[in-house]
Amino acid sequence: MAVHFVSIEPARDWAASTTVPLFGALTGTHLTALLNDPLPELVWIWQLDRAARTCRFTARRGEYTVDLPMDPMHGTVGVAPANLEARSALVPDAFGGNMDTPEMRAGVTCYLGVNVPGALLSLGDGHARQGEGETCGVAVETAMDTVIAVDLIKGRPCPWPRLESDTHIMSAGSARPLEDAFRIAQHDMVTWIAAEHGLDPLDAYQLVTQAVESPLANVCDTNYTSIAKMPKRYLPGASAGGGAMDGGHARMLELAGSYRAGR
Image 1 (tube, rainbow, N blue to C red):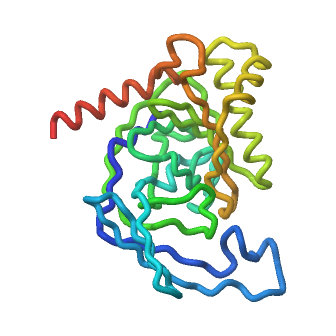
Image 2 (image 1 turned 90 degrees about the vertical axis):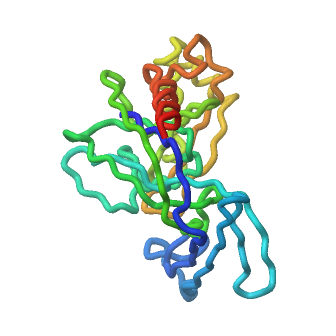
């Protein structure tokens, strides 16, 4: 299925972030037990200027403030997992879930494999912005007013979450350790390009190796998430202009345009 984010806009003029004891990339957790004390729970309130499109950081222990660009996104987008599993909303995996990638912004289409009747799509975890990796485990969290368009694409397997923007196709791999998440994303990108563009898998492997970008999504959740991000301008054939997954992204852009025109 294809989920296109028509718009993602903060529903209020403030957001919150925090450090959480035994959670985050730079602290001991229940899986990495250390003798030092857990980090304290501290809360930062961020002021959002929706007109200026900024998020204001204010230091808790000092006088420093700085405005960062607003970049609204959804940390969690997913469907029901396969094999009748019930999974925590904190977990990213093959079904999507809490991937926490800043790439999940307005104008992007997310492709997810359907595992149960009705798919049971869910989304949440609104972030006014987030750095790659979500290092402390918490982004600039706020409520969102979100508009999505959903379409069903039949006969196109999607083993791992895939994203498409106007300029890139992306694969998301989630696992621990981090190198396995990286391998999943890169492998899916190679096999996706080979299937979509008629390249030999080893030719696709070489092309991806030399052209791919590999931003981290999260290194704090139950599984880590790595992104393989490939510029479409380097891909062969007419589909490089937006024809991946049977042209799903192009169709969703048309739907989004119709929605805006009808408002």
